[in-house]
Image 1 (cartoon, one colour):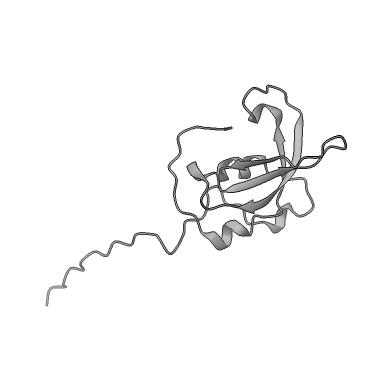
Image 2: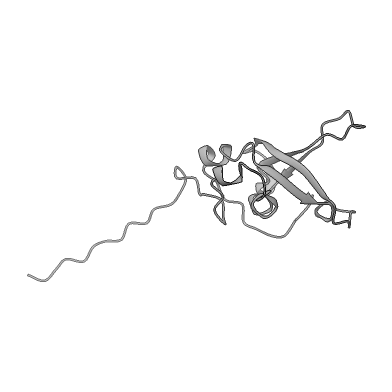
Length: 120
């Protein structure tokens, strides 16, 4: 699968992740294994699958070519989503795209430290 560098898989905020659905993408051909071109392939994020391995939660569907009958979909990690988002699209600014995926607030660890008592 494309872009297989080692990144830790962390739980992400599901509500925020779903808000990325509809984001337009421009992904260069060289993103896919076995391809080396620089032609941009247009598509959009159409779903989020939290069971997808390796953190590839975001489903990219390429825009259909006139001669293609099949829907072409790929799973992407968030770092690729933010990297290949179509910044020129009119709705780009309506998406919240921080540099890193938002963590899942329900599964974050919180460490409480014992407060030191003040001298009397």
